[in-house]
Length: 120
Image (cartoon, rainbow, N blue to C red):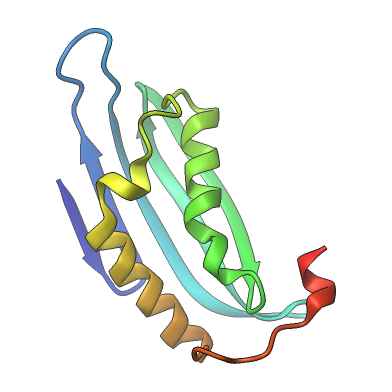
């Protein structure tokens, strides 16, 4: 099950066997003005992953925003989801909607230049 609304994504998956994996988490996010990075998106991932409570925050700036799903994957793997259990591809439609919402919140358009120094 997954539900998306701008600024919020809720995803739940129940283990089907004892060797399977499960999660029930939310990703809340909002545009913020970071004093060093400029316009950014602040994220909070919270809920349950593999029967353990998770509550982590991170932010991405306007030059690196497109990598938010990779960061969510890293957090999920860190908390016990196996690499084969890629949560963003399983819920692609909802992450695509989130991607577009974040682009809109940051005012990013295809072809916009980025600062190469921020990619290091």
